[in-house]
Image (cartoon, rainbow, N blue to C red; front, side):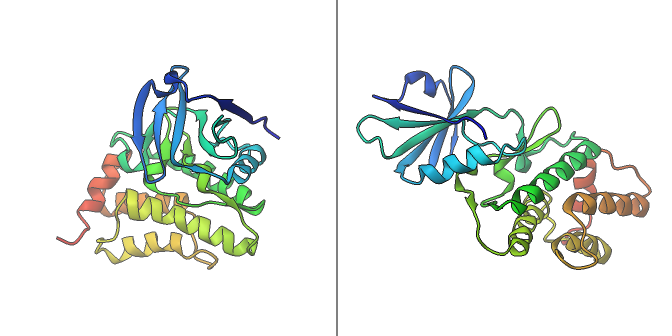
Amino acid sequence: MKKINNLVLPSVPKEYYDRYVGEGMIGKCYITSNNDLYKEFIYRRDDYEIIKSLAETFNSPHLAFPHTFIFLEDDIGKLVGYLRNYIDGETLDNLSLSTKMDDFIQALCEFEKDLYQNTMFGLEYRDIHAGNMIYTPNNQIIAIDTEGYDISYEETKSRIIDSLYELYYTICGEMLKVGYIQDFYVKEIINRSARIGYSDFLRTSQMLEVLISYLENKNKCKIETYGDLKSKLVLMKRR
């Protein structure tokens, strides 16, 4: 079990606000002077024990959990924010067109294996989307904003289906934006990664391999990068 730290402070140190990164619906993010990421919640939270339990239990290289929780002396029962390791890289909704697809598919395959294993042990993935999944320079996919995750007591099969479907939609719906594809065979290949539990199901990483092979044969070309793949898919979308 990982060691998680708690800090009770009179105020948030100014070095936590060294560089502003961005914000979402529940908080703002900054790079600290020590090159950690500090996330400060817009409203203080009282679900600290759940987040702490997840961070201690799931020691995953593909999930960015907090390592230090921040409280203030004026209300030590409410969580103000947390520190985690800063993850360098590109979000999947802003992936470089020069990204090598072989490397990306391998990274996605490793993420899928970890997701399956974690889900088997009760982790409920929530709010997986292209903006909070980062592809790192050393070819890893890491999910951030994990404070919304939970331990689920639902049937394991249902939990796995939900998690895999979220991953499918992240890659196909948000990253590749395949909703307007006209080519029947391309749509069939893509849809197989949504048929979780059926005999023709393909994991999303497998689907990308099959899709690229089909497009290479159809177009008599070589698809090596994300840009190559996107350009071939664009040709198959409704005008």
